Structures are given as structure tokens and as C-alpha cells.
Image (tube, rainbow, N blue to C red; front, side, top):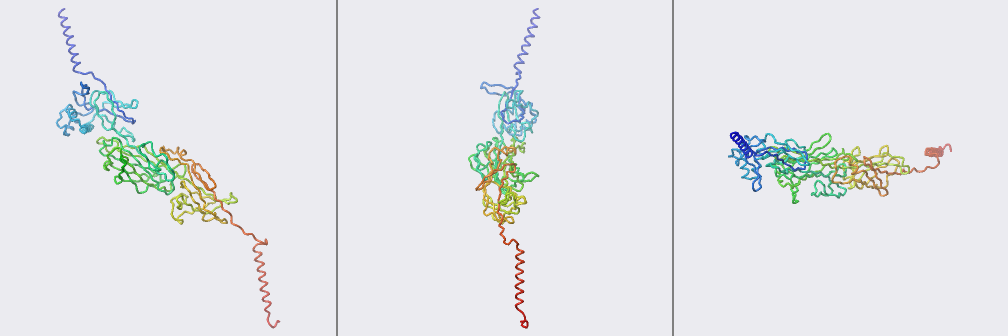
Length: 543
């Protein structure tokens, strides 16, 4: 019996030693998580374990990683070989040695070089993020030192990749080092006041006078546009920074040759950086595409992330413009470097497009008989002076092409069989209509006809780019004379003006026989006179 008790006691003791050995030699595995606070949707973050080890908390409440070995997310042997080419890591023999160098040097630049080197030797991610209540959660992680990155080719065009992040796990929360530029496009309204000078997308930018999202215009007029872009807050993380304004205009407009680019610094100072941009223009079946390209904004000396880049250019309204509600839309967007991590310098993203719209209007003239307005008069000829006092020239379809200084350069508009002609491509303002030749049998209109066109176009800073919204921007155009005012709606936004002429006088006749009888009677009298003269000249022998 005693022997049995001794054997049993020995077995229990051995089990206890085994349990103690197990408890002290192996720490219970815990699961940790990383929370990434990024309000931009659409990211997929991957966590790669660079170092594996035991997570401990010191007496000073510091989290440390001990018993360090290469983690599951890298090819440790290859990474160690690559690190030895960096002077600070030249003598390392293990993952633990590499970790000690990072700890002792405590250098931002060295840590960044380590992470960038590790990124070239990744194997498989330990876990991938999931979106929970607007945050990105990577969970199920064992203790270690992790590199967190966006999954390659996971973003759409409107975002930027986060800079590589590193973290020792414990449960941690972090914010990625990223940033997105923004871009807006504005058009200058020359003949109306714009009250609101702030765009919600750029609340700290006071726009220049009459810059907004809409404008009226004349055919042939040069319109001014501005493209404005910001920089990301992590701009300093990029070694080079590509910055390209893209602009798409309908064939209603043709960009002129000149443009300028300015950098507006945080203190309000401006620098001309036009020479660092090149302009590229191409024409498609539907549009004129223009790019303002800077291959490296940092080469232009731009170093502050709070700098704004502004392109100003002009475009001429050609004969292909739309008249009325349809409007003429022009869109811009920004292409930018969106991945600061080494080896990804050529990757780019783009901002959502921003659109402006320009409207122009039409005028229909109808020539009638003053006493009988139902009679429409053809072949009356007119010329038109613009609000600036210049003479209007138009193409064969009546679309305004230019405003000219001399009258002999003006287009002569002629009424058709219906007594009408139409001029398209007019904007707000006072006009003078001059009848240069009346219809046959009518007197010229005694005075120049003065009138004013006035639309109810609104000038917002938040146009959404949709044609469906145009009727909320403008739905009528008025024509105002000294004696009347009329409003005209409809998709064509055509104002109408009637001009009356007085028929010329027909002088009264007497006798009722007409001119033929008068002429015949005169001939008889002439013949009688001639006979009398002959009879008076008889020869002498007959006397």
C-alpha cells in the first residue's frame, strides 16, 4: 500500500512540474486588433507581421516585444540580407538585432527606411480589414510588429493610398497618414453681379469678382476660366508629386493659346509657376480636351501642403454653341500622385469632376405693316449693335461670331418670306437695331430701335452639373423697350421683337383716264399744231 501511495504521489508531482513548466514557458495566446480611423470609404487594409514575439508591459507601463523573431508576413532571410546593405543594420544577425537597432536609434528616417525595405519582402498578410461603423478593423492578430498597407490596386480613382503604417500589437487605434487634394472650376460672369464669393468645397478661399459656376456669353467672346487645386496634408511624404489639371469643353468653345499658373502660398503671396506646366490640347468627336501638366510639383519649389495651385485660361465661344436651356457645360478634374510609398511614384488618382455651365440667348425680329400687322414684310435689312457699342457679325445661320469695330464689318440681316430673321448667341444688355433698307414700297423706320435683353440667370457656387437643373438656373429671357416689356420662356430662350414700317404714299391722279389718255390727247394737240404751221407756209403763186 505504501508503495502505491509513493508511486501515485510521484506521478502527481511530475504532472505538477509539467503544468508549471507549461505555464512559465508558454504564454497563453491572445488575439489583438488594430482600428484604423479613416473616414474615406473603399479602403482595404492588410496587416503583415514583420516581427513576432511576446508582448509585455513593464513597470513603467511601457509595451514591449520580447523574444523577437521574424514574423509570418515577411521572408525573414531575404529581408535580413537586404537590411545589411543599410549601414545602421550592417552587423545584424537576427530579427532581434534589427529590432534593437530600431529601438536604440529611434530615428524617423531610419524607421521609414526599414519599413520601405520590409515592404519589398512581404509574403502573406496576417489579416485584412473589415469596415465596422465607419472604421476599419483588423482583428485576430497575434502579438508582433506589423506593417499595415492598402491592398494593391484596391482604390478607385477618387482616393489616395495610405503611407505604410507600423504598430506593435496590443489592441491599438491609429489614423492613417494620408490626404486628398481637392479641385474646383469657376467661370467669370462679365455682365452680372455674383453675391456669394465662397464655394463650400473651398471655404477658406475668397473667389475673385464674378467667379461662379454659371455665366452668360456672346458668340465669339473670350470667356475666362479658373481651375483651382489644393495639396494633400501628407504632401511632404512624397518624393515627387505629379499634378495635372484636366479640362473638357464642348465644341462650343475653343481654348486660346495663353494660360497662367500661380501658386498661392499660405501667407497670401503668389508665385508664377507657369513654366513648370505644359499645355496639351486634343479634339475628339464631342469635345476639346486640354491638360495642364506638371510632372513634379516639388521641382517647382512647392513645399508647403497648404499651398493652392491656380490655372487661369480663356476659351472662345465658337459657332457650335447651344442656345437656351441646354446650356454649354465645361468640366475639370485633377489628377494627382496618390501613393507615397517607394516603387509607386507613378500611380495617380483623380478628384471628382467639377462643372461650369454657360448660357446664351436668341432674338427673333418680325417685320410687319404698321397699319396691317398681319402683313409680314420680306427683304427688310438690319444691322445690330452690341451692348458695348460694337457691330455684331454672324454666320449664315444667324449665330453671332464676333463683335466688330466698324459698321462695314457688320452682318446685314434680311427678313425672309415670313418677315423674320433670328440672331443667336446674345447675352444680357442694351442693344440698338438699325434698319438699313426698308421693304419695297415702305419707308424706313424713322429711328434706331433700342431695347434691352435680360435673363433671370442665377449664379450659384454649387452647380451639380446636371442638365435637369438648368431650368432652376434660368427659365426666361425678357425684352425691354421704352414702351413695353415682354418675357419669353421655352427651351430656346428666344426673345421676340416686332418692328412696323409705314407703306410709302401713292400720289392721287385726276381725270380718271389715266396717263395713256393724257399722252394721247397731247399727241393730237401736237399734230394739229404741226398742220397749222404747214398751212401757213403756202407757196407764193398760191396766194
